[in-house]
Length: 253
Image (cartoon, rainbow, N blue to C red; front, side, top):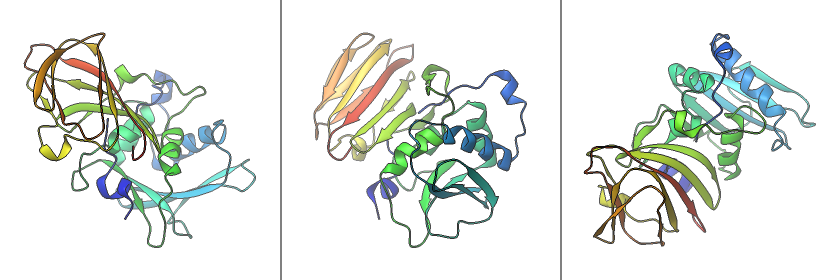
């Protein structure tokens, strides 16, 4: 099983917040998928045909883009060829459609056994292509350019902090997070090291960075570069939320 599927979308996306007028649109699954597919068809990153499934509260849909990249279809039922598919709760899909939470954030989890209201799975016989990670961002993010209103997006608790995922592709992950008073990021020893460098850019208030067991206060305007294999935890014993941007990069990221 591919590491991305086995361990989940580990990390800390956000998509374009929609205007109020868009929130009044049809909230049915077919209408939502059609809106995202129409936008993706015009995305500069879309270059090849693709087909995948979307399962909403157990109900299958297929999204297809044709070989000449000029049209798409949204149909009820499973894809006829084994491929990847998204699972989502209907309420979560509606939140993504309204720009309240990003799809990748909804998929975020620390370990494969963790709950996530949206996820990526593989049909029997399908292989995992790392390009799915970038496609996930571009399909579920509307607009050109794809503007990320990251402070306005909902976060989810992952690794002990409130995090949102911005963008993933092989060799690069990015996200944002808040460490609320009393929270302890990477309290679980299994979460404390990565096999690639991690860069934390603090954008608001104070926190305690525990690097290889040594505590140091960090805050707005400071960065921490954590080499591969180095233990790291973030704690907030203060009264205000701490805030950071996160970048993970290199082989294995």
